[in-house]
Image (cartoon, rainbow, N blue to C red; front, side, top):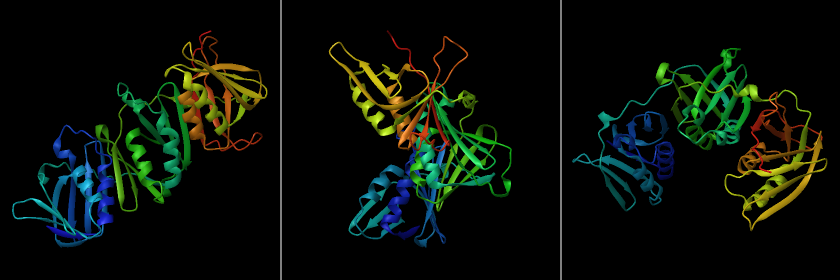
Length: 383
C-alpha cells in the first residue's frame, strides 16, 4: 500500500475521526484509525462500538490497501508535519512509514482483521439546516445529566414529528427544549420517530457540522443495536442509541404564562456572576422580583455577603425564590436574545415549589421565538 495526500487535508481528516474516541479504551484495537486506500481516494474511520466517525478525502493512490494505526498518535504527528505532501506506505517488515518533507516516522501496524465492522445506516432519513442544528445542540445538551447512574438522562431526546425536529434534555432539576425545521422529503407525516443520543456525541456532531450546510440524519437498526447517523459533505458520524424510556418532561411546560418578568439577558447574567462569587458551590441565590427590578442577595460565609439589583418589568405579584445560579446562567446563555422572559408557573400542590420557565424575548413588549424553552426548578430558601 502506498499513497500521497495533501498535508492539511490529511491532518483535518485524522483529527475529525479521532475526536469521538474515548481517552482511555479498554480494548487497544479500538484506539486505531482504519485507513483504506483505493482508486476512489482515501477513507478514514474510527469506531468504539458506541460511536463511529468516517470521512473520505482525495489522494493519489499508487498501491491500494488497508491499514490500522494508532489514532491519537497519528493525529498528533499529522498536525505537526512540515508544509509538504504526505506519503504513507507499508514497508517490507509490515511497518507503516509516513514521510513528509524531511520528516519520517515508522509506526506499528495494528491487526486490521481484528477491527470491528463500521456500522452502515440505511433507514429513514431527513435534512436539517446545519447551523440551526448546531445552535439547538448548544442550547439543549448542557442540560443533560453527567451522572452515568441514570443513563437515559445523559442523552438528548431527538423527536421527529411532521416538519419539526425537537431536542430535549433534562437532569431532573431542569429541562431544555428546542425545535428546528425538519425536511423528511416524501416521508413527512404525523408519525413520530424518537432517538435518545448520548449528549457527548451530539456535542461533537454540533461542533463538527456547524458550518457544513444541510445535515442528513438517518435512523437505522433495531433491538439493542439501534443507531443514528449524521452526514454532511464527506463526513459521517454514527451513534448507538441509549436504551430506556426518556421521562415525559414535555408535559411539565405550562400552558398559562401571564405571571412573568422581562429582564435584559446580559445585565442579569453579569449581576448573577458577581453576586454568586460569595456563595458556596451548591447554595441557591435569592431573587426578589418586583414591579421594576429584580434584586439578588447572596449569603456566603460569615465574612462575605453580596447584593445587587437590575431593571425588570414584572406582570403580576412580587415573587421571591431561590435559583441555582449556574443553571440560570446556562439558560441565559442559551436564550440568545437581548431580553429574557421569566415566567412563574403554578402548581396544584401547594407544598411543592413551581418551576420557572425561561424563554427568548425580542424586547420588553415583544415575545421572541417560541422554539426554545427552559424549565428550572427553584431551590428551597432557608430563612
